[in-house]
Amino acid sequence: MKNFHLVIFLTLVVLLVSSGGEIRAQRYSFNKWDRLVFRNNPPFGKRIYNLTEFNLGYGARYLDQAYEIRRSGITTMLGYRYNRNIAIAIGTGLESYNGGTLAPVYLEGQIYFDNLIRGSVKPFLRGSSGYLFQVSGLKTNISVFGNPCAGILIPMTYRSSLSVSIGLFTQWSVGVQRYSFLDTKIGILFY
Image (tube, rainbow, N blue to C red):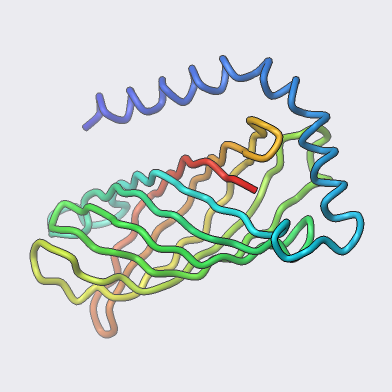
């Protein structure tokens, strides 16, 4: 498990270092696109985005039961940018746990801090909450989750960005103890 996390970390470092020139080259076009789109009241179609992410989580509390040691999966969401700083989305995915597989269906809100950092990298805060449905594995009563995160968007091309975030994924069932995970998400955002 430690080697797996080391491989993920080294892969991220290589991606970020090797894309440094690309980020500088796209800075002007990305900021120009963002300003142009939201200068006037843009049509609905220009406010829609898609974010597909790979998730990794490691249990933050008890590490001896099913559905609480580790999780990984892929999620995708379709969102609407209200303005340059606020976005909402609906998403779904497939999450593999140490005890089985669950499918999340969730709502998410994002706040971008455009003026916090000078340049093209955008820090953000986001929170998602929804339901988990059992797909396979050991029977569980886990049905609800919440996931606050903080991260950054790094422009890749004129209409796409790399999204990297870290947060706390907490899941629970009514009357049952909750399970929390330190959560890392890496994905691509398409405008």
